[in-house]
Each structure stands twice: as C-alpha cells, then as structure tokens.
Length: 120
Figure (tube, rainbow, N blue to C red):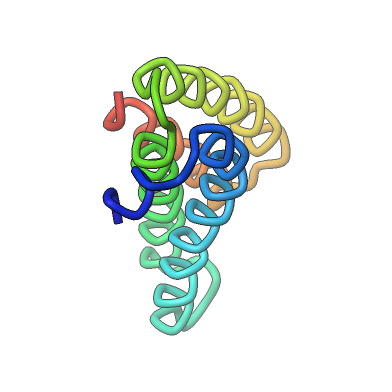
C-alpha cells in the first residue's frame, strides 16, 4: 500500500487524508459494533460495554494509522493534531454522555481517549 501511496502526488495525498481517516475509522468501529451486536442478548449485557469500549479505541487507532500512512510529510504533526482534536471531542462527548446517564456511549468516549493515548 505504501508503494501505491508514494506514487501519488503530494497534493492528492493531502486531499485524500481527511476522507481516508474518517472512512477508515468509521469502518473499523462499525465492524466492531457489528460483530459485537450479534453477541448481545440484551442491551445491558457486559459484552455490549466491552464492545463499545473496543470500538472506540480501535477506530481511533485505525484513523491514526491511516493518517500516518496517507500524509506525504509532517506525519507526526498530522497525528498530533488528530489526537488533540479527538481528545477534545471525546471529553466533550463524555461530558454529554455522563449528563444523560448513558453508560454505553460513555464507554465509547473512554475508548476513544484510550485509543488516543495508545496512538500517542
């Protein structure tokens, strides 16, 4: 894959960066949710909470990996900016989830934060 990306012009790689990061992170999180939902017999089953946490962490890690692969240069700066944006968004979402007593989505936000720190 890197050889393919290396052949693309830098302006095209910058143009593809945000869509690739968003789509890749979404697909990983969606796949984890999809495989997890088949295991849950009820909405408060422990596997639901584990799946929410895993989906959050893995989707962020996938997005950071894709950003590192697609960015033509300044890869570390791109990843740092994405981590900062994700941390701010996750803390805001966590505050909203806790104010609504929504444990599953709060664990998704915590998983996003763990993914940020693991990707750092």
